[in-house]
Image (tube, rainbow, N blue to C red; front, side):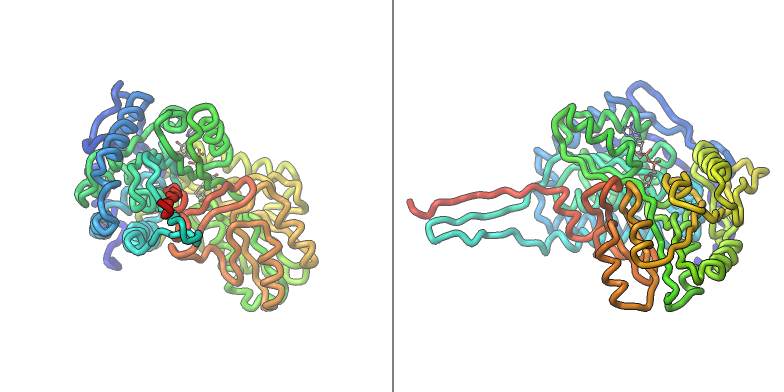
Length: 499
Ligand code: NAD
């Protein structure tokens, strides 16, 4: 892979055949009314493809197809070992096509090709393989009843699961839901984000090649307010597995309440605190982690460490280190493997982030570095790594999720102060903590209101551990064996042995 340079990727991009159709009932198709949305590359503003803009009629067709397949048992009725074999094949196909899929991600949403190849694609393939390997090793239960009864507790697939996902890690966010839902025996409808649907559309062909039967995996691209809402309100969808903003998550709860009470699992926004104590064991490493926590993937990361809290005594020296490292992360051509920071997903996102930066300045936060658009001549949407020193918690830079490369740093004095500031948010997704004091690490890990706590690292993880938040960051967990619980029901069967 090391021989792949920017010229290689540009050539490949120029000759790439890009599909934009929906995938319903085992076949690619246009939206019933022929509507399309343009897929535009944030790298240079170039149009990549016309993507089917699915509406309620397409969603309904996908749901009916998914339901038929589920009832027919072509997937739900297979032995777990058989589902495993096909999901392993899908993982292998993702690996075999990783260059094309990585290129689609980069072209469609602007992340550096280097990250797509080193992170998104391996994580995606591993996720399908992991749930494939898990599913034929899980046993059901027999309850400890008395001698006159046998009570079994068995897991059953739900039926039709709709996965509605964002654009920041398109394949990976989808995999976290699609893999366990399929492994558990459900039929799945994937609704990719309108900003980045291309890799999901390509995935459908790979799923078919892997032997996943028609109707079991469908892809309905389209606008959130149209295709997403139609799934949320559909009376025959059993479950919505959602990742995206908190505002949209709340809508899915309403859709459910107003339709069939489908279960809704939410992975929503974040404003994660990153806390550095003056006994931090490695300040250089922590500074690098603090910069990468907010500037990786252009800051378009739900667990971005967007609030940095540094203890008084080391604040100035530490922030200099963070800024020095961040200075090396300037945006560049995402197709150049040397680029560490790419383009914002679209012009709207870029403008929104620039507006937040302007608001932060107007509120009196002090701009330490960045703050501007970059590479405007490319026609793409780039923002400099931006760091603010904030005087207090009231700044919108501290309170609101920006979903861009904007870091809000503040000082704190004591453990209690750090916890008060860190927990002062409507969100509770991730939290990072740097200290050499083991007791403090344990103490604070317990007190932090977050679904994920990292000690002396940031954003580390593995498919084997749960991922998700508390408060308005949502509920339910992706990844790990616990994710399977979201996609199955427990059935109690009580058999009297007295007759
Ligand atoms: P979004 O909420 O705008 O969109 C997410 C998905 O919901 C998309 O598929 C979109 O089409 C759909 N959608 C949008 N409006 C809808 C509506 N009215 N009805 C039904 N569906 C609708 O979010 P986004 O801008 O794509 O993604 C960024 C957000 O996602 C951030 O808040 C980020 O923190 C969050 N996120 C969370 C996690 C996590 O694991 N917690 C991971 C990645 C991103």
